[in-house]
Length: 372
Image 1 (cartoon, rainbow, N blue to C red):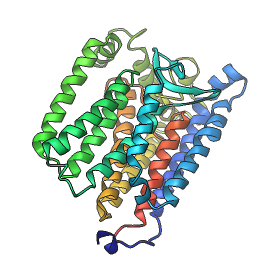
Image 2: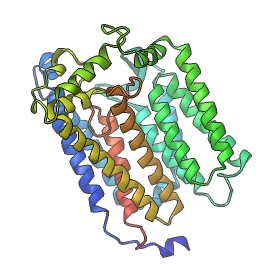
Image 3: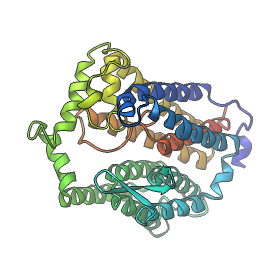
């Protein structure tokens, strides 16, 4: 009956599509500059990483967008549990010989020949899809029930969080669980459950940080950036120098000096610092505005959707894009402890780009079923 009140042949939200297009184009332009020196030094090709992003990230992103947009989103609701199970299995496979370690012994990738991908990025999509489908079931009062709601929610969330912590991918856990908590709250969860989960989450996160030296070092560096400028605080200090060097209008496209030899991870975690240096406060502000427009539009569409599953799904997508953007920019700007999360649509990484484009594909799909 609820679907009968929904217009089924509305055009998609063109503002949403235009914002996605601008973000992807801007991301490729920034990546072309941020990765040029590294590509030239390692592969004798300034556009090596840009080509790789186009070949794997953008192509898979367009495929994911097309599948999410072209098929009635209710179709995916029936297979949400299967998608989540598959992605959890993939999270487990990173600890097998199929897994590939990168950085600080971080087992976050699965390698299939020359192709690698991050299951942690995939689970952002499948977990929120499953959660929206699970909470949309009105036959059981899952949002208010302790045994039928809170306990299963905590069990599944805990299992996903544990696998991510072991990789380790602490920042991904914080982002994903925060988005899941927003979805659970919007579904009508009891406020006592929410307070309890937030309390336990903060305690668990604090314990993990305290028990792990490199995580603890990041927090101490955040509290005192001048304590070890050549080691622990080197990354954040170089990021702040790059951002400050951009001033109002930036030093110009491709003219960043920080990305050459000073700034760690210029095409990954630190890509916002490169953008701020080359395009200045104006350019960085415009980029933030694009993210704000995408998140606002996603929530606006969610508010207009009468279908419970579609609404909860968009709340999850809007939340995870907002949280990941805020954490990346906040960390690289010194407002939050330094993390290892990429900037959505901008940082190098085919899996992340494909997943976020798929999320927007779902959003555009659902926008056609909004009420007048």
